[in-house]
Structures are given as C-alpha cells and as structure tokens.
Length: 95
Image (cartoon, rainbow, N blue to C red; front, side):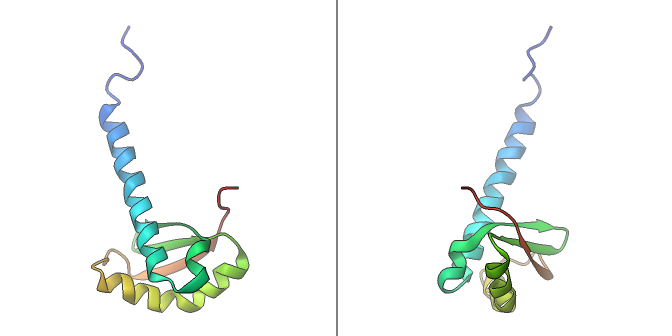
C-alpha cells in the first residue's frame, strides 16, 4: 500500500499558493481602505470577475460599501486588474 500523502504534493503546493494569494490580496485591500475600516476586513478573494471583500459586521460592511469605488480605483492603480465588480459581504473574523 502507498502512503496516503503520495501524489498529493502538487495539490498541497497549489493549496498553499492559493492561500498566500488570498492573504496578499487581503493585505492590499486593507491598505486601500482609509481609517478604521481596514481593521474590519476579514478577507478578500475573487469569484469570477468579482472582488469579494468580507467585513466582520454589517455596520462595517455598510461603511465599506460607500468606499468600494475608491478601493477599486486604488487597487487598479496598483496593477490589480482581475476584477470588474466589487462585492462587500459580512462574515465572521477569528475570535
């Protein structure tokens, strides 16, 4: 019998790469936000051509919605062109 992890090296490498890309994107989104909003970003990721930013509460999500155009402009100025739309959703951060 083969060890369970045999052949999974490429899968783990891909998972690690995607996790790092998500973390890097989240950092860039936080940097594009002014003030306290940046502290309330749980994560940022892509879903097709949409940049999805997850806020830690509905109140902060609403504030981020008002800033989504300026965030999109800032990210595009940094070379981030993978998205055509921005969506703000609410999720939970780590306790």
